[in-house]
Length: 245
Image (cartoon, rainbow, N blue to C red; front, side):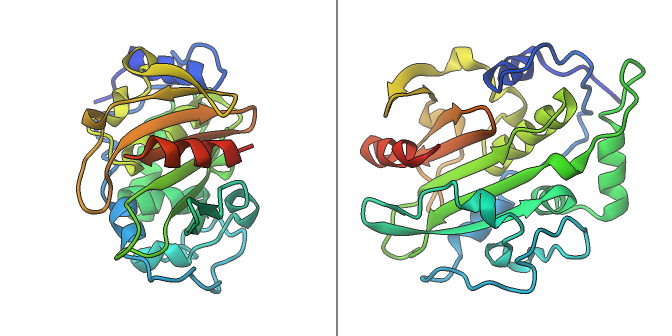
């Protein structure tokens, strides 16, 4: 059953510089999981992942091996925007594009993802979602035994309100927000200036906490990209934010 986009997610679209998103209507059955990407990142080896055969700008569903997403480097130019080192600790990076991001985030089959995307089509805007504009990159600890569980997430700003809404939902869910559909309500965040950037700082209660992730979210965006830092160390978050474009 289709429902209107929550008003809080409309506020999230304000974060990325867009207007009203009344035409976007994802269903309650979207079912994006919040634990898959987090758990997989945290199980990465203690060195930077090597480039695999999937380390191209592939967007196809068949080129998306979710057994170890840290071997996926489908958007190396986007990964390059993320810090390579923070607090003298190297970060391991991976990235996905298009339908692969949906597969990583939902664990669904190609036909099920087609149905999910169809739920974003409305009578007011029947155009299909253009998944080619979806790009996602993650930088996280490279040594799971010695490094604190911190992350820098990035999503490219898509062209339309539909794609922006979907990208935000996927990014919030991938970061294990307890309520990803309402995570964009900026009234729940504290606005700060960090490293000369406008940043919205959330609370630890917003996120799932465990051995693979601890801390609170820091949201930041520029004209081209949306970023989220998760850390329990404000100094670490500040250094990471300072390195973002």
